[in-house]
Length: 111
Image 1 (spheres, helix red, strand yellow):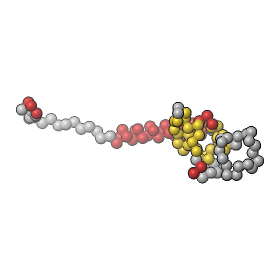
Image 2: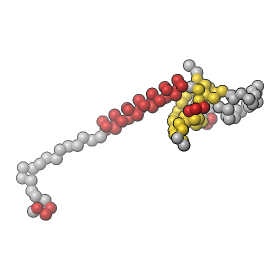
Image 3: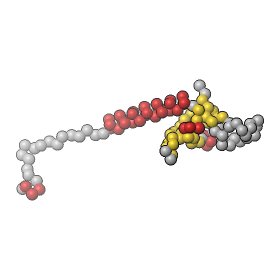
Image 4: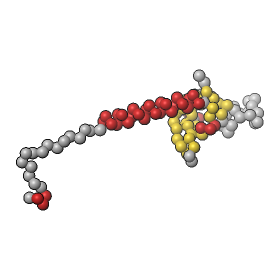
């Protein structure tokens, strides 16, 4: 299932090959790699199909037309967050109760 992301300002190496200035070019989003919030707007780091990793770009959510990829990414992100939280809780050392000696001696000023 291929999803497209619309970018009108993206420069292509082969610019000018049969495209008009009035219609924005559409690029195919291969994968969503990351998410961030900038100035209150959600942006996604996108891997574009047919382009190298050096061409990955941050795009605002409103510029994208790939709700399936976004929801899939968000579900995966949520699962990973839950798993890491559970792992952190499992890795925490359990508190051991201090043994009280029967002849507990007073300490400090109580001596």
